[in-house]
Length: 186
Image (cartoon, rainbow, N blue to C red; front, side, top):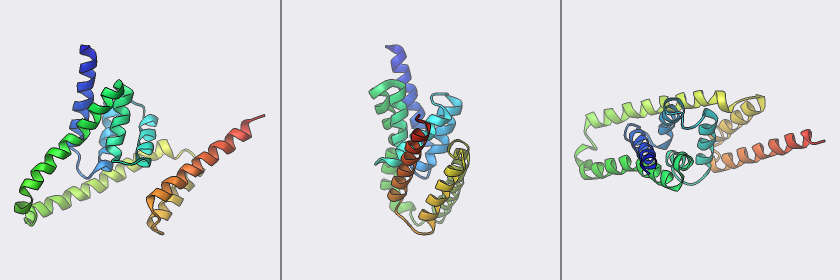
């Protein structure tokens, strides 16, 4: 019993730490999650975390919370999923309460505006770092690169809704899997 409680505490504390020291929303948590879950703790492999990110992006909700729930569930079942979710959202909830209380006093303050601009720039860098690191695991061949470039073009140049891009990626992945399976079948 003590071992299970210790594991649940580790899951909660790890997600609380990630949530507390990550600014910029769910996507900004991904590099920290990858570093902690894959490299530091060894709870999941790099391939698994990429799969969790992909599934989490494809379902409703915040990607970081969805990912933490899946990892928590993998580690300790339903209780692990609940601890992970609670740990992931509690820091944001507490900060949001504090911001709501003091919002009017700080919203127009030049120091606060400057701080938020600096944090925003750092978040863009973190997102770029995450995408750059995931390319090795995700883009394994020319077909993957072409699919990635097509998705980027649809999003950036044509303004296609991300839901349609994700569904298109799902369809392309399923098509490739079925095509490969048929080629291998005798």
